Length: 182
Length: 295
Image (cartoon, rainbow over all chains, first blue to last red):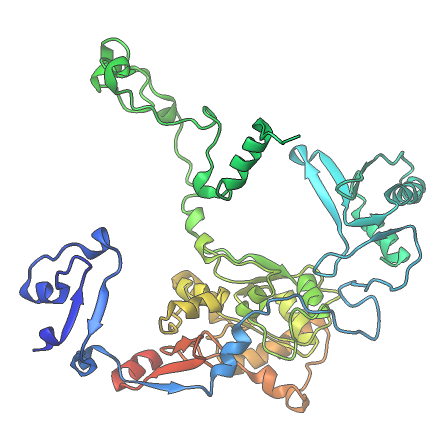
């Protein structure tokens, strides 16, 4: 009786449930057609012992919300003292320089160390540069040469808006940019 | 003078009447993609690319590495078992105290809530991939001198000096084990809830990890709480700081929060199914299910 109440048919019209109960092989639904079309005529004939007795609750859903990540990067909170314990300094507002170095989406400086050729070639990369890129390059050169005592070799890529300096000067360049207020 | 439709107009009309460029009407230049040659048919048949006679034509070639009887290269040298099974070992990708402090400074992690693997993975600044045998977070001591945050943090591996650094600021650190299924749920809870399966109950650590997680010196979650308190005092004496009194702390309730050894999410018990769309939690009522998940 239960079998005749619910008819699960595949699109070729064969009754899958009936075939299963009788032990016959129906046409392999997934192989031939994809999803079956369920036509349940009477819900009370669903075999209840198959389903677990459950209760619904919304009280603890607040704990679920805490587990879901936020979709955006939050603004950093205001601190009383800078730099913060981890050494982070916010960018200064209202700067009047011919160029600007914008922060990354995680509010950090876009200064990176590039290690190439199996570790023998180290380059300092400064990205996200706005304005007069050559002026920034000159300032970086004039800043680094007295410190290092060597000639500062740079690459300026105007289209991609980056400057590369040969050597690992990430800390020095970082400090230079922070002092400028970027 | 009447205007006669020229070849240009015809071409433009043709282009205008064409369907929009889409994936179903694009093709590469002939010869740009190499196709698999089956070598059938009149031209390619007969020997089918196998040449004349010999083992190569007759499917009787010897095994790969065979050198005609000469002692082969791959057998000349003995196996060294130094790294045997290393690819299957548990790994704990590191997170330094400096990184943690930076996350707190930038508001990516809230120190007023307990911090666990989910909190760290949700920042998207720390990555833990269970498919690569990553079992959780290893808190390292880089930035130990600048670490100032007071946190209730739950890690999977750490060292004594890191524990001292956290407790010196009045924080709480626990070493907690999660089996790989639980780690998969913790690392991306949203994806896990979308699967619609009950929250798993966390398994106990394997034999080689039991020693670490029952050790009060590493603040193991299976260690005796009294011994853990003693270890706190000892560590404070060793590193030379005063043990802060928790009961007077305004964040005492938060710092006290600990998960049950079988629990993987704060506030949610194993066996529950979370329905994100309808914002509802399904809990089993049957006694045998409850007993199973509470065992």
